[in-house]
Length: 306
Image (cartoon, rainbow, N blue to C red; front, side, top):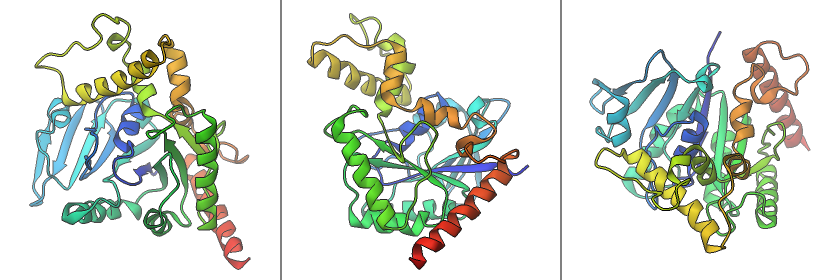
């Protein structure tokens, strides 16, 4: 059976790699703030043991340990294949991509590398910030996603950070309307809205309880701490600061995960029918994708005719 390729796409610095880490349940991808962090395509594949193989700029092949990959030992490469023995990868290959619309020559190179993914991917997870989409982003999305299968996660990283806030519900509805006006029809994960508000920081905090259960020393750092773990600590710190500044107690793990909003997304990729489970006659994963794709293209054609 053909493996289903799920690509995470969107503009730079909206938390795509952090969301990939949340879906995997591991701090694997490098993450950062303020600058574009991901410059190469990373393919997460099912493997018997953690292992990384990279294709370098000169076409040569290199091998890395997971620790070296997390630390960014080899910064510039064309492609990385990361093999992991994770349940998330039983049915899909999950691809992290460079962010779109970054400026300068490096940004253009990132866009070219990401473009190689678009023809191969079967399904897209579009990550956007919690603000109205700007015209250059809409034009990029039309080019990449028109007639394709995709879901939309709105990572609430600006202003109102709680995904279930009234402000974010309004913003999500605005983004959905913008997409539909551009003839981009997002698929809806069961239990979610078409543009689903999430906050990856809350999910990270829920997965790293040792960092926040002891308020007297929540940040144990040593020289051996991996860069990925240090970036996760920053996110946990952010969540802690949010509650402490409001003189509120930190919720339990279950409540943090519920606020983060990524459980429904993660769980939808762990079943045979994936995120298209509402199609009655889905008995085979790939056949289901093909049927949903054909239905979507027909709907897009009808929309254009109108």
